Length: 307
Image (cartoon, rainbow, N blue to C red; front, side):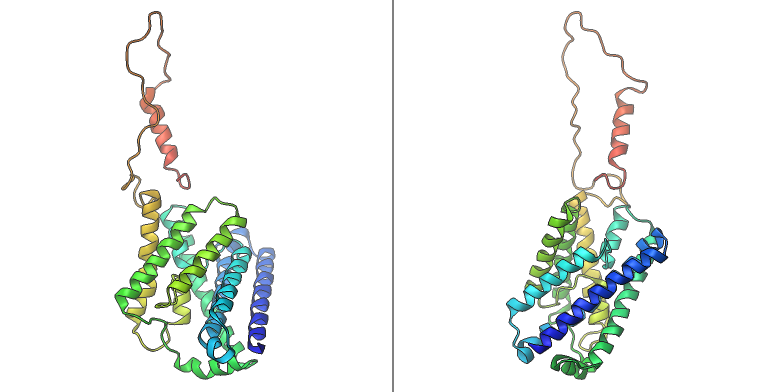
């Protein structure tokens, strides 16, 4: 169990250093710079480093350390739980940032800055984690250092099947984010961590990344598939799944379409029909009549974030 203790120490140190970096960034940077860039860099680095170390435990732990699937899944759930509780609202996932763009909740420049920050954070996590492995503090890290230059692809199925798996995982992930976005974090974070753990268990064909930046950091440099095949599975698949989730949940893509494409919007208020009772007088309407009031109400519906 010495290898597991070393990995647990790595996880603890990663969360501690990233939390310190967040506090330092908040103190030194403006609120806008922190939210759009520094927070994303730190969140992506935290997620990337933990996933890289977790991959070592998953690939080498069962035969080199005797770790069972129950231990690995429990550890993955706990890592996702702590990450969700400490990320301070960082997306750490390009498809989540693009989802905010489609929902008209973020501007194009802010989204591009977030994507760059996430890529930078993931690559920094890879460089630092590989240097940590080079210290060879455990037998697992010795083996990982030997195998790192000849890593194998995490894509263990055909490209169409892999694209379908990644797209389906991204679809359910983003649908859950949209469904529980207004839920209290004390409920939302465990539910999201449980869902991601379940999909990681049921999606071994692609390792169920549904995170383009994370997949590029972990597996794109490995042999076994071309860059175009990796891009189709780990970029196009999650992006398609995210778009379908937004379309199913809202019936439209708010950034592109104002009109609901899937669901008809029926007026809740019906004008009563029939003759007025004797002596009943008409109620005066404001200037513009019902049409003006209905237009204002429909415009309020279309404001970003109003659903």
